[in-house]
Length: 370
Image 1 (cartoon, rainbow, N blue to C red):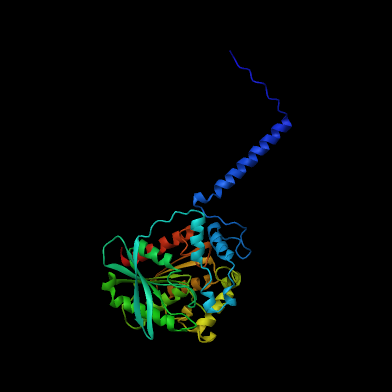
Image 2 (cartoon, helix red, strand yellow):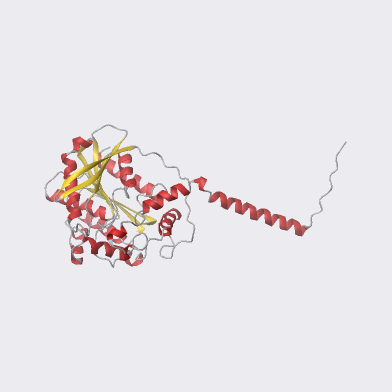
């Protein structure tokens, strides 16, 4: 016996409405899937900023999160207040939680060490690979922050990545900062920490025939200065130096300073604020230890330079690469578009940072013969 079902009488108009509703619901569902935190893909919430319409989504998500904390701009603060502001690391960690980004366990062990320096002592964090055979290459790492703010905790991701990917002991140096310790204190601390590593290599399972220096921003400037001073003092030279968007010129009216004067997290007023609180007077910005492009650059180790497009320091980093090449130094440089200053340590959420870390590690391994 067949069961008869009544025929549905649907007008063309109603059918059109149903189809529109289906399309709408499908679009909403796809949107929810695309922004589902379970996917682990980080996406920004709002439109891209006027100061960088070309910024990539993941990078903008990081900066957008940083701005969402509502901290007062650094140029309005005292150094002590500025050190309490949120950091790019805070933004990355919050995005990891919000979007359930899988983060593998670091394949490095860490321990703290106290390093004696002229006038006191500084703290360092030593990263050692969990795999591989000692002695390991030694890479000194100097954090950013304009010689005034930040610390080794803020830049932990960069130091850990270099240790893990190169297979090297990384010594992250907590140098003293201005205005409590003005120029050239941080520069002297950086070099004395390098000498400490040479003298204590056995204690940290390091190989002094494979020394390297690295740093970001102000730390990139310190790294280059260590190489210069080691050369001038006829000391053991680094085999390689990694300079990530280094401070390298006193000219704050370069093309990138003009184009990205309002960029975040680093803008032109913040750079001027850093110089004010580290230097004894603004004329010291022309000192070749600050303005590396005016320094004697021959006979320095092979160099990797990593630059960010949306960064006031982009032009001087590119100029430093040219000056190094003209001085006969082997240079590998790479400009990452669509990212900002401070991107290097954001590899957990920004693909270009992951690429930059791999690029830097590869260049270190070539220099070390690994």
